[in-house]
Length: 475
Ligand SMILES: Cc1ncc(COP(=O)(O)O)c(C=O)c1O
Image 1 (cartoon, rainbow, N blue to C red):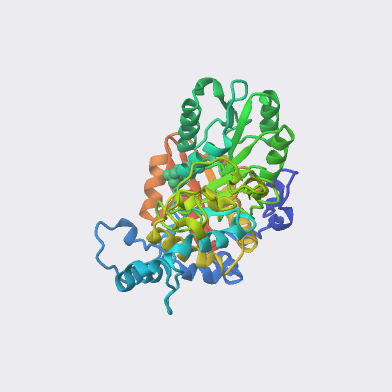
Image 2 (image 1 turned 90 degrees about the vertical axis):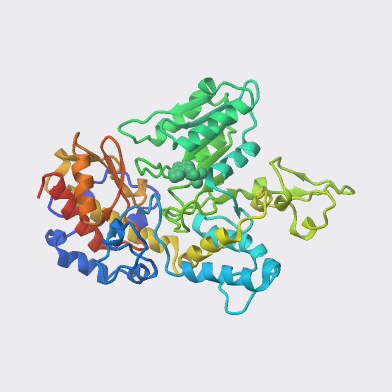
């Protein structure tokens, strides 16, 4: 392999976002601090880092909230688990508290001057509209409500309609446990046996599942499947599944398909509407930076969100779902007449009055996304992760660890998952911790490293790889 040419380690097939992926090449001096700094100074998104609070090396070790001054930034590569706090968050939260303390119940419908916030009753719609561009939805296809697993349950209540002969759910072999449990319990709830009704698609190699494997498993069980539910980006391996192709294929077999976008939303470009995805759900605390356990998003394709009133009839016809007063049309919600008129679109899948403080934190984080686009973020992300991969693999490091995330940049998001040689995890973790570097680790031997284009720098990547290579015994 010619030195510095990353393209040689990409597999030959680079799919859909090839134009964005490009073929990043790095010069011989790419592992110097000076080079990393030069990438940062030419990064068009470099000012976004300033919009986030980067935990300092000392604050990462703190046991108290007492102030720490003049400390060096730590290196945070854990946005795949919990995104960093946008600096505007405290202003938004304070505005919400001030609204509540000054006008009480009127905050539901009053927009105050000098406030970054909408009235509480409009915030969910506002956040939903802003989220559309992040997931490629048209107006009305996104709702903001609840949390991810709750939304998966609510969506399955509508989209998983098993029968005696067609009751199976196709999922992946290592779905995130909450998804696995949710599916298991939905199947039992309908009176079927999860052991028989859960089809777990197996990986081809390591943790990576080829599209072909998914399509052939769909083929094998197509007469028995009631629902396909897959991750957009797999939480462990970081694999970005081919959502349009798998969706199209499931539809060609007459199947419903939903996507868990926990690790995809705010990470990779999505076109849920154009891809014809039936439904999707995501949390907002990872790449979307809305804070731990923040309110979640859901997508229902417009074809499933129609509400019709047949002529001469005031009883609406709409897709079955579980409902509450917030599924109902805002204009008649407060009539208290028990005549249910669902909101057309994804909004009709809301149930309760959402928490305003929770919506406030999402609105703060979305305000940062408003200043850029997923295309811009993806462009940087591809280069940042390519740089990470390049520095990790330089000099035959693969005896000490393996990257189990696909090396093809179009088949992954920001995260690389590193499988360490047996026995290395404790030492690597301790060296990273000492250096003020935060990554996610999974026993017995995996670390997941997610450089996030909004707030990570090329210098972060360079500094991380130096510590990492030393910790695994390479130089
Ligand atoms: C892929 C995936 N699904 C589901 C969940 C559970 O999310 P929640 O606790 O917000 O329901 C997570 C959380 O990290 C996740 O990564």
